[in-house]
Amino acid sequence: MKNIFSILTIALFFSSCFTISDGNISNSSSAALSTNNFEYVKTVEGQSSSVMFLGLGGLNDGLVKNAVNDLRTELNSNQVLTNITIDKNSTFWLGGFIIRKTIHVSADIVEFNKKKK
Image (cartoon, rainbow, N blue to C red; front, side):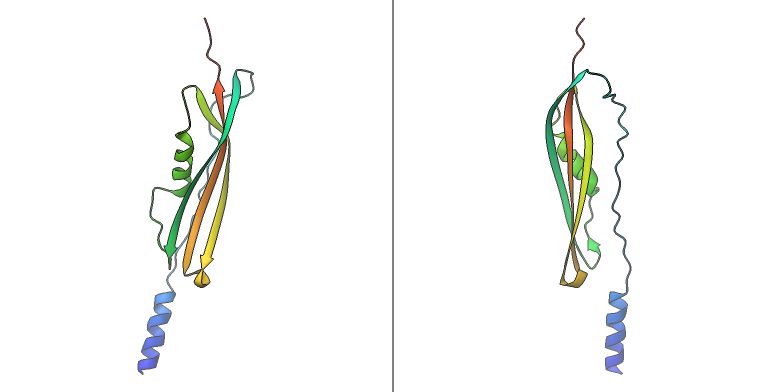
């Protein structure tokens, strides 16, 4: 009886469900790059990661949000991020009991020319 109780307790403990959302980002910027009023400055990269054990942990404002905020620290006035690329990487240890999720974001910085009067 004790063995059955132990097996049921372990089965109940490992049968919980959790969801990992990848999140999405859209290029909803209204900056028009079709005219020749800007110049390329550089490419920047940001990263954010979290570690979860049995689906618990990883609580933060959002991995993509944190990684993009890393990019925004590089901006000066009249500059915007464009060509945003997101790479997602999940690493599983101990048969999936420990999961490390890492988001790498890269983008180009362009600077708009100031109009002279």
